[in-house]
View 1 (tube, rainbow, N blue to C red):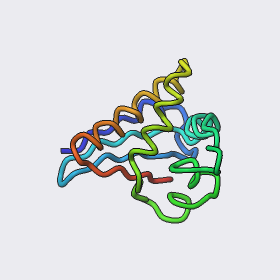
View 2 (cartoon, helix red, strand yellow):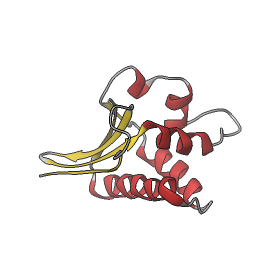
View 3 (cartoon, helix red, strand yellow):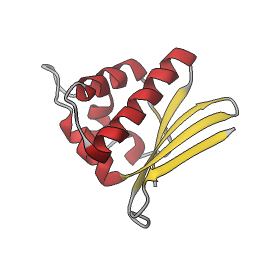
Length: 121
């Protein structure tokens, strides 16, 4: 069964989009967001003492989903930690809602052994 949430892309049709795909076997959940929202979230992640890690590394080095779509997120635990740190900043509005959706997807993927992919369309 495939569930698609494109609420955060409405009004941005024709603009670049980012898809978060949570998948296991025939079950998938897809969150489609405007790339600008994703950029806002990723710019909030700060480098660690020894440099960029996890999703922030791929985002800042323009690799991962920029080179290959869909691209599988390799370390869900690091990604979850990064988004969890942002969630504690109490970000509001649509960006805050998107952050909670992505965080929930990552948490579920770890708990239920799903895979997460990012696709840039």
